[in-house]
Image 1: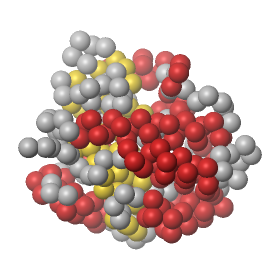
Image 2: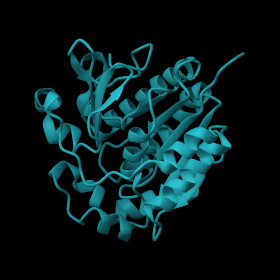
Image 3: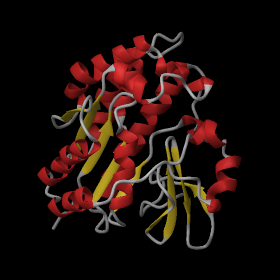
Image 4: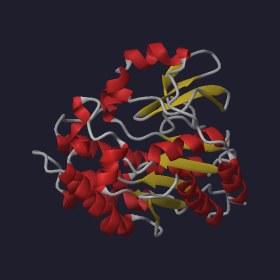
Length: 288
């Protein structure tokens, strides 16, 4: 009998609580779940790196990444040991940026949308379920302290950009999902309420037991520190600039150990080799 694991995509503007939700999910779910970290061009090298440092070059990289991810999801969804796939963002993130940015040399939104329609959409698994977490621009700024921690994150604190992102995720993004998404307004909602709505999406996809396991798991307490076993790799690959802060502790997964950060994840296998977590390349969802 054919097996096709559901794919749960979490997307939305900065400050919607996506990272906090993902931390809860990753720590609660086990080896039968595979996840994709938020795409990060800074961690790509060689032929997989952006072809040009401009905003347009980075947007094309994101779209190319999403095409590769859609194909990988089809393979992973058919694996007998995978019950659920979770993706931190998908094509919506790339299209949202192209719609909202006013940066010079940016990729026109219409071009990005056409790439999605012609190349990415036909490759997406039929089991994709999307949860869009909405947040007002004011709440987005308040939750994140209103000031960028690093200069390169400054654009994500621009009120005009946040207004346009809110418009995109409210009015346009739902039309770009294979199945109508769950729209979750996080303004005024508790984390438990948001978690319950996402668990409902999983239950609707036939994962009742997974949904119950998720809602019964304890909430994380505070921001975890970087595990000692990942310090060297984290530093060598760019540190805070490249990864952001850790948002899970180091957790066991499929015979290895993984720690997720805001902009990437690190994996240590049973032999003690540490690499970037990369389900795109590995047949079983481990690091490549």
